[in-house]
Image (cartoon, rainbow, N blue to C red):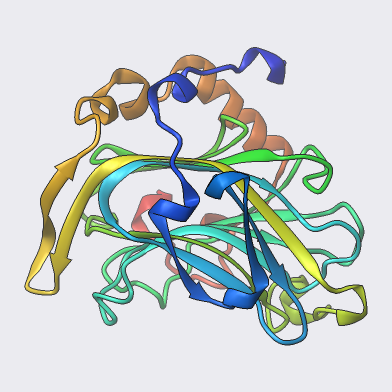
Length: 281
C-alpha cells in the first residue's frame, strides 16, 4: 500500500480552531501550557496530576481532528485521549467515541485503541487496537473522527482504520463534547495493567496543535436528547460525498491497516463474548 498516495481533501474543507477559544480547562490546569497564540497546547502528566480540556460547545455530528505529538521514552501506563462524550449530560445513557493512545513498555510501541459506546452500552466494550506504522513521538501526526448520520470513521494521517456504519441497533446519536486529555491508566492501559506508569521518566508531555472541528453546535438537555441546533458551521460540508462514504482508495487503505496493524478486535474475542454484538456479523 502506497501511503503517500492517500492524500484526501479534508484539510481544505474543515477549518482549524483556536484551542484557547474553543476549549475550557477540565482538570490539571497547572499541567497545561498554551502556545502560539492559543493554537497549540502541551498537556503534562506527572506524579501530581494529568491534564485535560473540554470543548465549550457540544456537537451533533461533525469532523474532529487533532495533530498530536506523543511523549517519548518509556511510557507504560500513559493514556493520551482525543474523544467525544456526553456522560456529563447523560450519566446513565451516554454516548462516546474514543481515540486512546496507549503508552508501552518499549520505547516506540505506542498503540491506538478505538472504542464506541451508544446509549450507555458500557458493559459491552467495542475496543479495537492497532500498532502505528511510525514513531508518534518524533513529530506530529493527525488523529481524526468523522461522525455523521451515515457512519463513524477513525483515521490516522487520513488513513481510515475503522468504520462503524449507522444501524438502529447500535449507534451514538446524541450531542457530545470534545475532550483532549493525558492521564494515568496504570490499571489497564499497558498489557492489562502489567506495566504501570514509572514516574522516574516523568514528566510526560503530549502536544496538540492544528485542531480542526466542523459540526453542528447544539444545546442539549436530558429532556431533549437530540439537542437544539443553535449554530451550524458549514452545514453542507458533512453531507459531501467524501464524508458520508469511503472511496475505493480509502476502503483499500483501511483493509491494509486492519490486516497489517490491528492486533485486537472485540468482534473476534469469542472468549469475552459468547454471543458477538450484532454489528460484528
